[in-house]
Length: 459
Image (cartoon, rainbow, N blue to C red; front, side):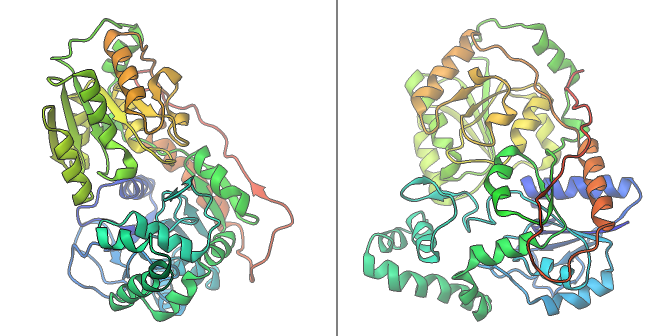
């Protein structure tokens, strides 16, 4: 089988969740004898300017997909993509994250009658911020006007002047559209995309309803998006973790039940992920100050928003905090081997945080906020704290330090299991003929693959 994997970015040093997912799938599929070609954008302009389909240097086939910024909805025109698809001639196309590149590839594939699979990596299909983080009313359902979307984006902008515009009625109605759309067009966004933004949600859900199959890594993503789907087959396949992350010995020791009090001068706490306000990293620092744990080591792995990182460094004054920057994926197993507790303090719904799964595989305990997407990968409520509450996190940290929080090994799917189940989705998609024109299916096509035993690390 020949598979075309498409995503926002790949290679060029990108190692975050989507890139890990696509890379793991590609390796696993090639190991099973399939031909895999990857197509990816370069939104951060890390490489030289390239044409559509131009190959990047490397051992595995990776082709360039032009990206035109976060406001892309459709992206390139489908007729521009058709020659590329004819040249690659894939049996199935799998799109993981269309942010910055748009959803035109799905339209082009449908016109060429190529089966398509989409993995819902986040909430981009409903929210251009991909977080469902509303600036006024908490978690958003995505059913808002495009003007409100722009105000929401402006309210959380890194520039104070843009944030002020979001608070002024005339400015946010007139100036914000001119600001965002004008800048996007100057950066290469096609003018028709501006008009398409006014019906972004309608367009994207129509395109998503025309794909052959949708894969949800979590119940959280499925609950948010499945009510909008009619025709595609639906599957739930959790992210799989590579063998090098599994530490059987450490998991066995945890299962043995050693829950003695911990020496605060000897333990190492950690955070791994993006440094962004909605990830709640500041709560960890505030909780440590509340507890007076000034000597306890905290390792922060990741990079992100410069303004937020400066805020974190200011909060870290007087604490024993080490900012490590972005750690290459190959070094992450060693990172987990050197910590005692991972903290995941997200403020908004997650899909299925890979860092939680990696930590579980490595035998590391996890304390996390009680948000949708995280709760389904944390087996014990004692390891959860209230959202946006440094006080609740401090209470859980104190309980963990005294040994009152019992660490029970959590189930983790392996990369091999994920690849195997995804391969089965492809096989089912290939035998189905895509429809010739959009239209609702008479009944929902929700499907569950046969459940394989989930590996328990250390078993």
